[in-house]
Image (cartoon, rainbow, N blue to C red; front, side, top):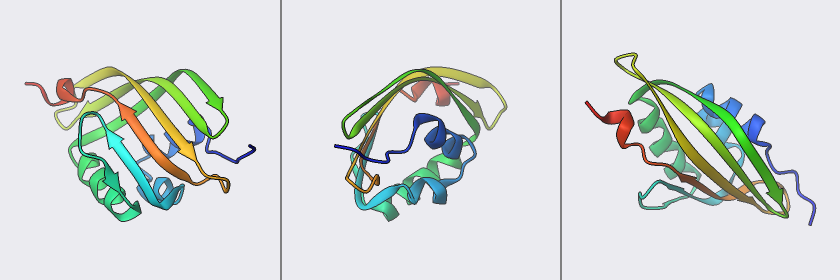
Length: 122
């Protein structure tokens, strides 16, 4: 199967730039997103709303890609994500992001495996 899946570099550039509409444009209308141990989000609008709310709780974020693989319709990216809190303190966490695309390259399933608790710790 050949697809035009977003590369990790392209996806994380949009996320790090807080270009949420750009990220949303990469999603299928019925896409699902799971973040940590949270309930899965279903649909572009729900994903956009949740990500918009999340971005308001941090000043910035930056992904460093440690490794990545693309296997058929699935991309797996191992990253270190540095979050800048609203108090300007930085917290760097390991994360794994997995996305699966349909034939037109739009993301249908997006999973972020990460524990965000340290970002919000006192």
